[in-house]
Image 1: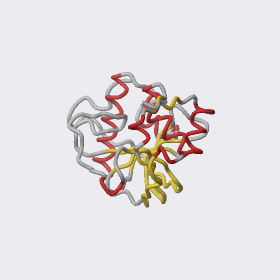
Image 2 (image 1 turned 45 degrees about the vertical axis):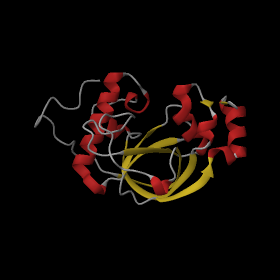
Image 3 (image 1 turned 90 degrees about the horizontal axis):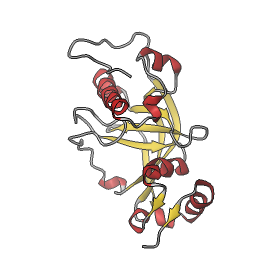
Length: 197
């Protein structure tokens, strides 16, 4: 996919694109309790819809707890070590206004395809980071994030890249290591391995 922009002043927001309103529950696993979350941006983008220019912080959640774990640990071969079990399982619930990349109209308007949600090659990630900056720059605080198709659970889940100022009610469920039913499901159904040391 080519870059979204060729330089300053070279690009206009597509006509007819509107934010979607989405309600419901999202799940996240985080190294910090929500009360300790920092929204300071990374100087360089680390994940799919982080800011290309380091202008803001993006966090990620999935529609299901299993989906959140699959997305978070797939690149590591779905292996959990003891430090991972100390991470906090978090729910986020409410209504968000988002750019929904699951809609064909949105993909067509930006000359994108499904790789924007699933691919990991450097050129696609550059485009993801550019898109995040464009969305945040165009909508500002009116947009709570970007919804996109889950790479590892496309039939049962979706992902939310959300920004600071989102209206979701955030609740800490507790340490991942205490979620026994979830961990059992990850091992049995999702081929996770949990290491003791």
